[in-house]
Structures are given as C-alpha cells and as structure tokens.
Length: 216
Ligand code: MLT
Image (cartoon, rainbow, N blue to C red; front, side, top):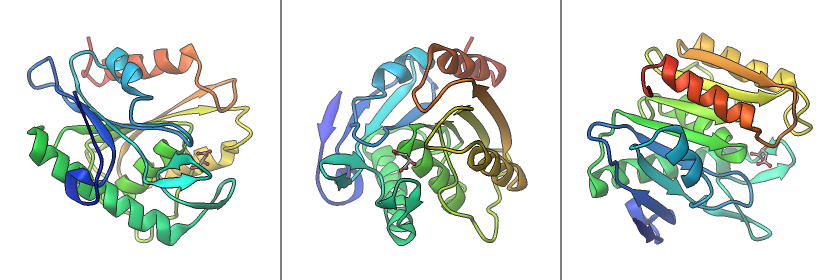
C-alpha cells in the first residue's frame, strides 16, 4: 500500500494503491464524494470485488477544505471548464499510475460516489477508452457530451435514490439516457432513499457484478 502526492503524472493526485491479490483481477478506481479522501472507498472496494487492485484517489480541488474532483459554482451547478481540465488530469493520472504499478489499462472500473461518480461519468464521456466501465453511486449529468462518445462495449451501473434532494430523478434518468445513446450497456438501480448509500445499494452493486461475471 502506498500514499503519494505531487504535481504530475502518477504524482498529480494523492492516492493509495493496493495491488490485486487475485491474478487477473480488475482495478477499481475509487473516487470519493465531496469532503472525502483517497481512503474512503477502500473498504467498499475490498467488499465489492475481493482480490481486485484498488486505486483510491483524492480530488485536487478544495472547497473550503473539502476535497472534490472539480469546482462547482453552486449545488449541482458545475464549473464546466474546470470539470474538463480536472477530468483530463485524472485520466492522465490513471495512465501514469498503470505504468507505475503495472496494472492493465484495459480493465479499470471506476467506483464513484456523488462528486466522484460525476467525475467518473465525465471521464467516460470525454475519454471513452479510459474505463472499461463504472459504478456510479448517486450520479448526475456532469455535462452534455456533443457529439456523443462511442461507449460500445463499456458497462455502467447507476445506483440512484428516488428521494435524493441533491440529484433530481430526471437528472439521473438523463444520465442513463446519455450512456444508452452512447452505446454503453447500462443498468439503473433505484432505492427509495436519499443521497446517502444504504446496504441495499451495496447489494445491488454486488448482484450487478455477479451478473457481469466479475464476481462469483
Ligand atoms: C457534485 O457537486 O458533484 C454533486 O452534485 C454532489 C456533491 O458532490 O455534493
């Protein structure tokens, strides 16, 4: 396990790397919500996909001390130029981390919560080859891609809350639609709950991983 911080390549983000313990297992790119850090989703990653490589990353933006992956102007209103710049920075970081730690670049699956889910969606839209797929927990539309990317062969799970006060259901539906129109294999799991994750979300993710043949 290692922790690093710096300014470029694999040093551009504070992160933690846990190598896979199962040969050939994918790498989970773990992206926290606002105010979280590189360690937040490690327990979830270990539980979701035992044996996977885990790359926990801290967002480079500070909102009054709360780490995020890109700036926002208000709740749900994003600074889109900053989003694009930070998304590219994150994509470059994953490329460099793959070289440093020796994980395959073709089987990285993002697992993001809230702000981390939104940057995962942004990465898929702007660099379609960056991720094999993504689990987005409480995600909304980061930006409207035009033209749509080609995400054929990529897989997406959206886990959303019908009562989420931060993400209107229409936003989540629109995100699913954008992924579908881009050719991704999309599933949406709804819970009758708010922005916080519940055990039902985790079960839904685990069942989805089984359906995808990634977990037994
Ligand atoms: C965001 O700002 O990315 C999300 O809407 C919610 C959050 O992170 O608080």
